[in-house]
Image (tube, rainbow, N blue to C red; front, side, top):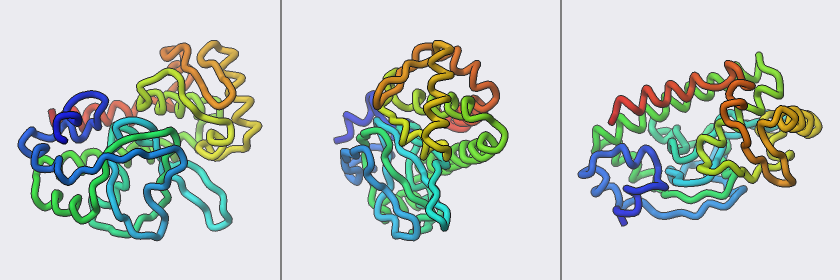
Amino acid sequence: MAAPLRFAPANNLLQLLPDVDFEMLAPDLKHAVLPKGMELAHRDRQIDAVYFLTSGIGSVVITTPTGRRAEAGIFGFDGYIPTAAVTGARISSYDVAVQLDAEGYSLDFDDFRRWMDRSKPFVQIMNRSMESFAVQLAHTAVSNAVHEVNERLARWLLMCHDRSRSDDMAVTHELLSVLLGVRRPSVTTALHVLEGEGLIRSLRGSVIIRNRPGLEAFAHDSYGRPEAEYRRLMGGLT
């Protein structure tokens, strides 16, 4: 079971573990097929397992008391979810759902907590990943407040591209409206703007990245800092 996890596609955090720690952890990991729409955690409910994606995209979704929904953070093979598990909190504070078909490994909550007590490298990797995710959430909050929808869409597409291993991403206008917290017509208009700039191609049910450097330039300062922090935090463990 251990061998496949040591080669791409794999989860970045599991790859960072020293061989001896990984070999002991591997028997506790369960392969999981995670289709689009699958909920990995529910707000105010018990966390049963922690997930390490090897492909696909998931997101943390916040729902207001009146039922409005927006994405707060995105994750893929770069991290794990729910991050609350690292603190020992058993109840999730938010919803977590798969947005693009995914695969990965699940680790029972109790096993995750046992490894937090057992392995110093495991603790360091999980803590740094949680800090990196917190940086992303903070910058999402700032971006939602100060950037236009066009730039925010460019940022989200770049973040998705970072985690997708493909230029073709199966995202719909409806999904993007939820992730950005805006009406669907606003998403359609923003996609037309990016397509008009030659940065993407928008198809029914998918978006294709055509010009990655141009998309980064279009996103301006909405993209880049959390990604740099991730490299700094996780790079210090190699």
